[in-house]
Length: 106
Image 1 (tube, rainbow, N blue to C red):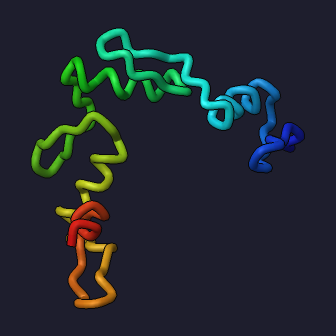
Image 2: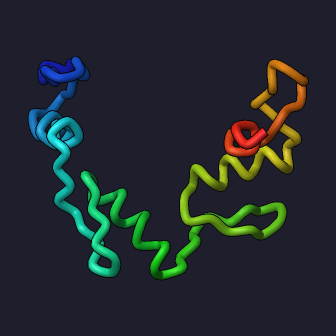
């Protein structure tokens, strides 16, 4: 059951504390600041991922080629290259791409 509903967007939460955290997004609150560059974030987890830029940490490694990434989502996108997946297709010319960024540049 999710009785705690955001009055701004309608998203519901099981815990009132989760609703309070969510409402930071609408309020523009960014209480977690990077001590290296000052960039701030709504979530401590986003700050932790950001800090990898400064430390060079890349904990997610491709088992096939060894390339490393600072986010698991980037590794998951990279895997498409090895799998031959090209989910982004141009409606004009039919060319397909593994990455949405390559498709948008096209």
